[in-house]
Image (cartoon, rainbow over all chains, first blue to last red; front, top):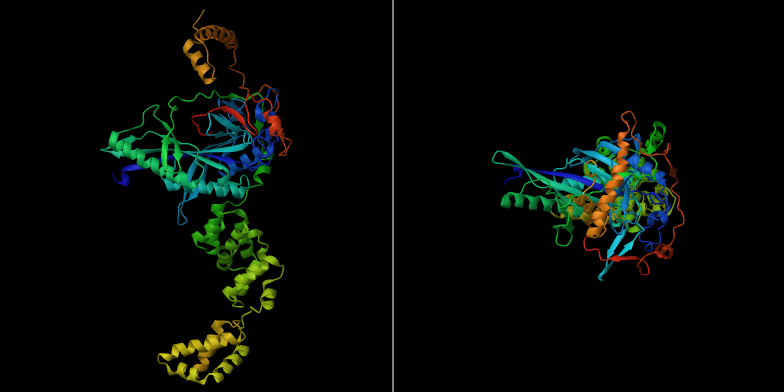
Length: 488
Length: 103
């Protein structure tokens, strides 16, 4: 069966952990890898009489994200109980939003290569609380840690507009960039800040009729790699099942799978045939949230230029390649740092190279961002200008970059101190060229001869001159002077 | 008496969802009791609510929000104090065979 005979249909559900200091409905601190059950209070435990109170920051983060995802923000929203019995959920219900989500009917634009973007519709965006963590030990029991219980999660649900495993990954990565730009989530995959659940099936054309394969939901994926691979696996598996057994969608044959990261296969989760009955109803413990114009306006003040738009601007306004622009817009601090340095007069391509080649490497070694290296955008721009004006070599620029991290000095001062200024002064250089010519008559003769020895002799003379200037001469200027002298 | 409000099958289903292990005698007893409760509540349907706005909450207030400020948690020892079963740091529950995979 050729590719054109079927279409991949994927909808994605994403849970993003909000970067609040405390939990959604109580003041317990959110600390990664804290002592188990140390950040727990009567609200987390669901003790009788304990009352949840909404975290304003979490609500505002949710509204800000919904706005950035082009959603309609609900003027009136409320909280519902989703009944669910599990040891990691002491109340026996999760506080979530059922029929009135904070945001709805939005879209996200994702880069699909070469500056081309694709719009994926967002069905809904709502806030809810996370459950605790179950640890399955080797013995005949399980351990429960409730530190995570009550962590604010933003659930984002897309329409089934995604048409390849790669697009699923690109969407996830774009969303990560957006929430980081907005500062609403650290979106650290290693800490489980983003979890994915794709719904996958195929629309197949065969013998003039259309067929749909059963929808597979893959639960709890926490890396971009697992996300892309699991969708790819499901696509192949569903295609095989259709070809071999004619398996198509029927009411009730939606299946739930887990992902085996080692074997790289999806694993059917048993006992899921029965549809869940969550018995949603409004939570009487929490009053509704009304978002008026004024509050919405204040929250929208936290919006910034979004990464994809910025990436496009770096290409159109600064003439960078789409690749360079995407590297610079991985996080907000780096992109704004670059932008400021260019606005301070640095050539875009030169500043980009300084950041992506020297800056990112150094920052990685230090475990911080480029913008935190201690070089203000103005000084970076100055360094770029000096390089472009051939006052320093590209190699010297790297040395000065490293020095600038430790001092507040201007690149010019550092270059002077370290004797890195390239001599472009023709008069001064001419004197040195003359000295070298006088001291090496044989080489001059060879160079002038024009035969095969000429190139080698020319190189030798250049080397002598550079040595005399301790490498500070501008090679282009030297070559020009030497060329003129030898022709004379 | 009109139609029964709840039958034995539904009671079994509710018991299952609530993780309750009921005997046959209890199921029969609760079917009768729950039916009577539902019948009583059904009286509300006699009211004409066609002109009443749906209500999300019985209190006429909204936006009860708190600042994102850390408050003292109980700490591990107190958190586990009332647990039916525990070890040094965790609640202990019967072995969970299958992970439904969060939300």
